[in-house]
Length: 261
Image 1: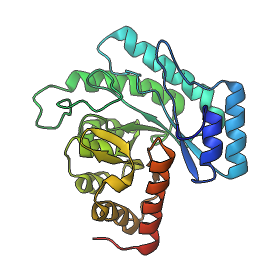
Image 2 (image 1 turned 90 degrees about the vertical axis):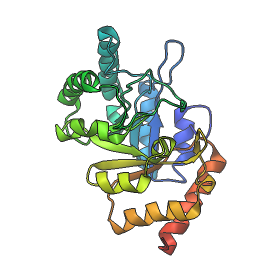
Image 3 (image 1 turned 30 degrees about the horizontal axis):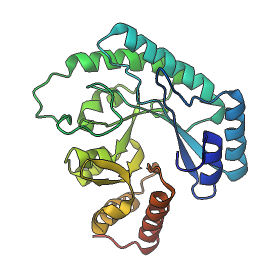
């Protein structure tokens, strides 16, 4: 949400600023914003009138690799239901988190996992594969469902796309929070990246304006994507009008100038 009080108002305003909108869904025991049939029809109409396409970001509370079978099954079932409920929007992609540690909506210091971390991921990977295979049977297409790197290196997701079960949503902000080399990850995974999440990071704050980042660094990333003829989607994952407008200006200035280092 950037504007307004509900999904349709938010999309209506955003459609005058961008050509693709990420619909971020959330679902907790006490609160959710899952759209009903009427709201889906409104969103679809806005998309058709404004020539705007959609990506659906599935709730971050889903745990398809949970060690608890009930939680895992409930998460898979809700994901399948959301595929059906939002299918009328014809989303280009669905984005899913697969938590390793308990789901969190804020960065937690010390909970970023890398290849050097001694904890085993084998069981987590096996559970995730079982769930992804079930979801793939329903949604089809290896790039309809994208898995996002969250508080771990994207290298832990390689097994999933190598099995043809998903593509990659590379969140550059999460890489910065994990003190990873953003440029290295872009170069390494360029062929499987379908969506990039771009936002500013300062300390452990994320989803900030790109203006909080060094200008040369942002230009370097964007110009590499231009030179590499990146065909995916770049999503400015921001949640305030000012941050969005500042970041759009920075991106457009880079695209028009073609100056990078």
